[in-house]
Image (cartoon, rainbow, N blue to C red; front, side, top):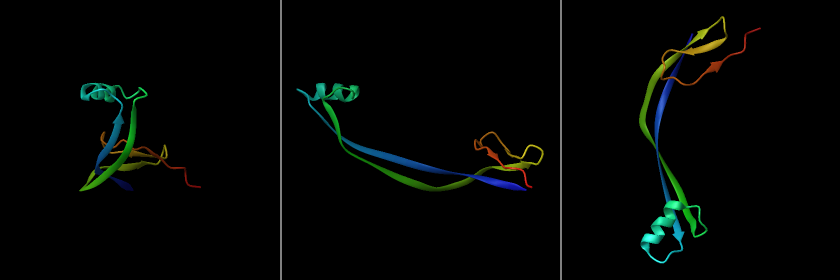
Length: 87
């Protein structure tokens, strides 16, 4: 009894508009880098996701009946599954 594990790549882009109170462009950029002063405000934020068509199998789980655990077949599988014993 095996379960397959798949990986999907998701690319995310975040667009932010930030208003900064400053005397000139250099000061504005320095304040942007600090971002914890009272002179900066994020006025717009939007994220865009793109799911690539790159679905690939990266491993499998094999069921260990003694420990009631699904064990991954390789080190790239980071998910862990525990299953309660059957009655």
